[in-house]
Length: 141
Image 1 (cartoon, helix red, strand yellow):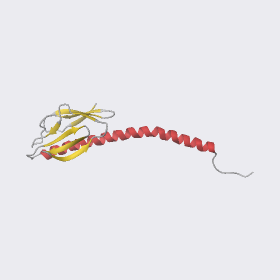
Image 2: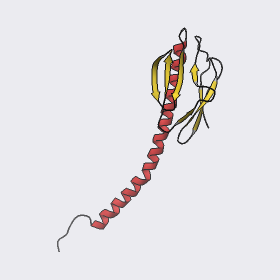
Image 3: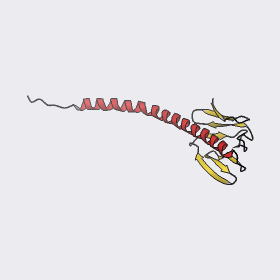
Image 4: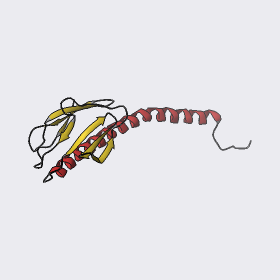
């Protein structure tokens, strides 16, 4: 009787079904990690853009401000000119509350302090810009 090497069809189907189950279990984990990384990257960029706007306003007679014309993006402007424009991830909502635009005077002090919030798919973040030379900070709820 000749000896045959190889796998049977049942063995192959069993291995493929195990791999399919493992792949199906890891996809939701990867999507939630992607959402968390997107949130982290966006808020780090927003914080740096706020600092950039503040640094532009130092010793400048022109007004610089960061504004949210709609939920899809935000802009850094000088007068009527847009210096920088960034998009907000799809599905996120911005509630401007008491801070429709963030502007600083020539000493780097915020002109009108206030708060606005950003609603992501999983969390709500409040961005608080207090009176004084301090930085705006992001508070996760």
